[in-house]
Image 1 (cartoon, helix red, strand yellow):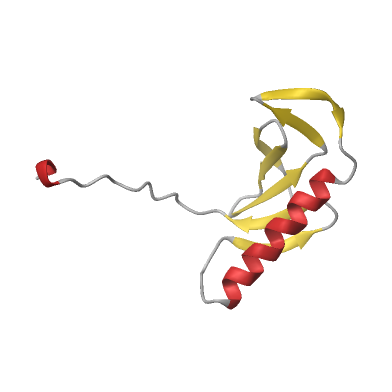
Image 2: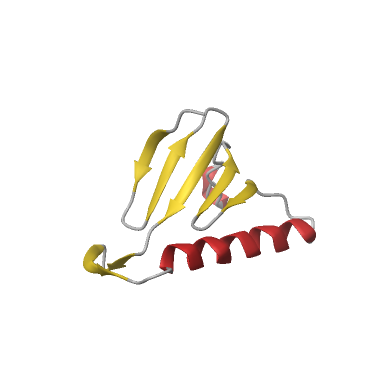
Length: 94
């Protein structure tokens, strides 16, 4: 399976796998939108596991989400989805 880097942020990278995405979490530290030049061991793994926990819990509650599979130690496979942006509707917007 070919992985194409889709985006790389301060603490996470997303790879395009065709109809799926792979998220990889790093041990980097980001404070006030800056990366600190040191690492927190297991931070990426911990963030990933926490996300996996909540996605699975939401699924058990009947809340659909994009999570597919945990990729140990610091990755997850998710469905590629279209993001629906909320709209602000006011009385004057008619």
